[in-house]
Image 1 (spheres, rainbow, N blue to C red):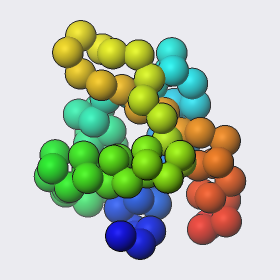
Image 2 (image 1 turned 90 degrees about the vertical axis):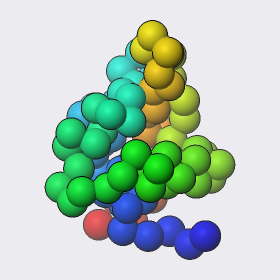
Image 3 (image 1 turned 180 degrees about the horizontal axis):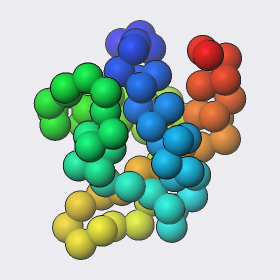
Image 4 (image 1 turned 30 degrees about the vertical axis):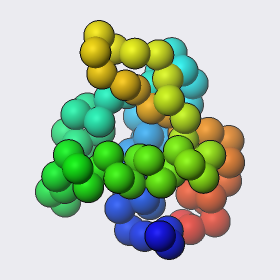
Length: 83
């Protein structure tokens, strides 16, 4: 899977929310509230898994039963390249 617009939007949202550490990480549901275009939970989950696999985001501390995610330094660098 190649880098696409959904990946760019996710990185932008995480950067905008200042989710750059495990303690500031946010859930997929929280991210979806800021998503400018309607995306399903499954689409966001697949995009997050791709970004996580490529070390552009990482999993943070759990929020109850939900996983949280934050942008890494590599993710910030990739976002700046794309913008």
